[in-house]
Every structure is written in C-alpha cells, then in structure tokens.
Length: 419
Image (cartoon, rainbow, N blue to C red):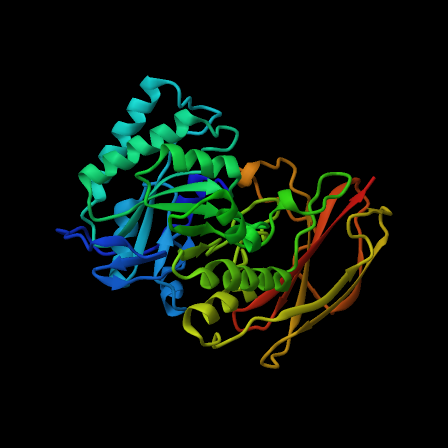
C-alpha cells in the first residue's frame, strides 16, 4: 500500500529530545546455513514494529520495539523520539512512482540518487536507525529492469556511505516475475520488504516457489483491503468487522511472520493509528475516536506472551437488513449485533450515519473523511435496533462503535443506497 506522506506527518509523535551528537548502533544481517538473523549491537533483534510514529509510548508499553516511516520529512525528530524509548526506526526514503517518474530517464534517476545520498549522510550515525527503506511500491505498473537497476545503484550508494545499516526495498506483495527481477538486478539488496494483506497467509509458500532465498520483512500487514473485498453495485466495499480483522492479524502473524523464524526478520503492523481509506476505520488499529481495537490485543499477545490489561469488545455476529442493498427512502434499517466483552464490562452501542466516501483513491491518497449526515452523529442505541433512514437519495454507510468505557472498542459498518 502506498501511504501518503501527509498521513505520516499527521501521525508524528508529540514529544522528542533535542538534537545531540550521535554514534551509530550497528545493525547486521547474518546468515548461518539457511537461517538468517538480524543483530543490533551484536544482539538478536526481532522486529516487533508498526507503521507510523504516532502513539509511540503506547507501542513500547505493548511490547513493540520498532516503527516504520515512508519518508524523511520528520526523520531527525522521529529518530530521536524512538531512540529515547529504547527502540529503532526503519527510515523510509520515498522514491518516484510511474505517474510522475521515469526510471529510464538518466537525469531523473541521477537526481534521485543524489537525494538518497544526502539523506543517508544526514542520518546514518543516528543510534535510533534500524535500516534504510528504499522506496515503497514504486514497482506497481513499473516492474522493469531499469527500476531494479536503479535500486541496485542506490543499495551500493548506501553501503558505500553507511556500513552499519541494512538496505530494504518495499514491494506491493510479490509475483514470480517481480522476484526474478530483484534476484537478477539487485544482488546488493539485504532484505526484501513486503506489503501484504489478503495474500499474507500464502506468502512464504509463494516466496519459495518464486526462488527468494534472502531474508524478508513484512513491512505492512492487516485486514484484507477494499481492493480485495466484495463490493456493491455502486462500488462500496464491504469492510470486515474489527473481530474479523483481529483474527486475520493473528493467523497471518502466526503463519507468515512468527512461523518463519530464520527467514522472516519481523514485521510492521499497519496502522498504529487511524486513517481515511474507503472508510475512516478500515486500516486503523485505533479508531478516530481514540479507542484501541482487538487488533492491538492480538499483536500485544504475540509480542509479549501476555494479554492486554483491558481486552477490547468482540463482535460475535452482525446483521443489517439494508447492507449493500437499495433501501427505501425514509425507511428502516433493522440491525442486530451480538457483542461480548472478555472481562464482562458493560457495553454501549453508538451508531453514526455518514455519506459513502465519494472520491476514492489508491491507498486513500488525499481522501476526505465523509461527512456525518445531520442528525445521525453517534446516537447511543441498543444491540438490536431499527434505525430510521434519511430520505435524500445517495450512498451511505451506517457505523457502529461498541465501547467498554475503558478505552477499547469494536466496530462494524454497513453500506447502503437510497435511489
């Protein structure tokens, strides 16, 4: 997934120490037979990370040790803040995409190489640095020899300046051809970074089939994306509820991350915060209203072996009579949800009606959060209710937030249309 740089800036941490003289903490990728391992300061380092740099204190309280960025806009600040908390940062350097960048254009690639050199010189000695992320999904519709030859050039530049930190390039899942190109043209690349959602459960098998033998890191993972899910006639994707999402985080982590020790060096869960993409709730491990979801509990359990101090509510079943259907103007949506709280907390059910997102973009780039329909903002009703629908034609989505009153919540939503 291409994550907009505006999202990254918005998710920046609120505090960080002042600049100071730095000495690098060396990071190495080492091999013993067919097994790979990441060493930081000579000690094994399994990446327990997330995408984004928001809620930083909460990450480390939950057993995390690393964060990932996609660009360097706030790199010094973020490196300082992560290091102060005992963690490390995969520092992304944004590279050009096909819509505006031609990897066969020598002038453009020379400027980009000079930019990369400058960023590496600027941050290479920071003790909070874990590895260099060279680009993110720039191979989409652009899987060409020229692209990978340039990535090889950049890897060599980084290694000539900074012998202390590995190189990673991040791809949008894999194909046999993509892996063949990287194997052929990028021998200097240390680690393959893979953003994988619906396909993560099968990724290790596909990597083996494609002939990838170097280590990999899962640089983004989470629920199935809007591009992978069923859609209505008006192109509204059906979003999994928060418990379905949590189950996918768990299964994918167990099979393709923890289950591949010696090959997979760790992962960055997506997203340690919230963002607008198709909906305001699709990819966030937290809700826009601030509560954590069950996905956070799943990841914490795998990082620490211990449950969260306050487990999130769970959706057991959900029905909405108008989901992905044409509804009667001024009619009724019949809703029935079964939810539970693992600790027996009393639950509250908050309903909200928003317009369907109008201008949908790849990865939510510059998407605007859809407006709340006047009079339909967070009404507290019951788990079984009849919701009066508006009369104005258009595409809508009903959102339900089930809260425990202690900072955790479950969520589900249903798209419908009035013609």
